[in-house]
Amino acid sequence: MAGPRRNYVQRTTGCKVFGTTTITGILDKPALLWWAYKQGLINYEDLCKELASILNDESLEAEGKVELIFDLIAEFPVLGLYEKRDKAANAGTLGHAFVENHLRGLSDPETKGLPKPVIEKAEGCYLTFLDWERGRQLKVLHSELPITSEKRPCGGTLDHVIQTSLTINTPWVEILDLKTGKGIYLEAKIQVGNYEELWNEKYPDRLVKGCHILRLGPNGEFTHEFYPTLKAYVPIFNHCSDIYYLMKDLKEKV
Image: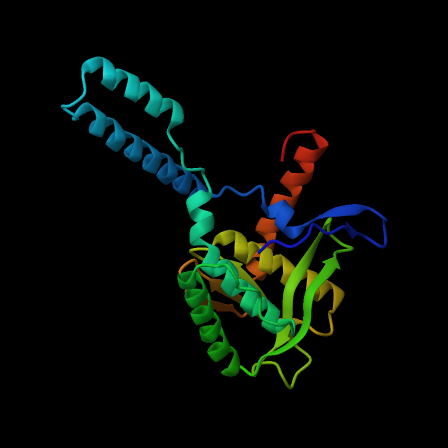
């Protein structure tokens, strides 16, 4: 769930730099192209069904059919590109809100007016998370923590910095990042890898010793991926950063 856009300013230079998610936004997202194709196909199939119904109606004369076809094309309710996706994502979005509020010590999110199936799926997702949390003795150290690099032109806001049974009696920390959607994609690993790098730069005496990415899916799924480190993805981020700033310098759209 995207938060408010933040200003990241380097103390040593006074320069404003861009955030991690803004920079990784230049990455191709093939899943969205496939989604757009499917949405277009749904519109096409629905239109074909309506046209077939008119053409096969033996009670209509040819002129009446032509008139109805023109009216259909002019008034056909086209499904917006993100309309179905947004509806499907409600359970994941609500599940995200349950988990986020819990980790930040806030009350449960408001569910009034939401469809009962969405609430049930989201609550099921949340209960699965609570079981996962209990098994790891999770302790939240920071939430929504902004960090600006002084070595590289970037910043980022870490969802949560935590300790678990893996690090609870050590100076080390872990990063926990929440995602909604149908999978944990490359972009998520690049983002969290850069968060790890940002933290380690600022707190070299409290290094990251693990990264958790939790997925709260559109149908109430809960999945967890753990990575001892995501440093290998930082060079990809740095290349994205180089391209992003070069395009900005060239005044090209990014």
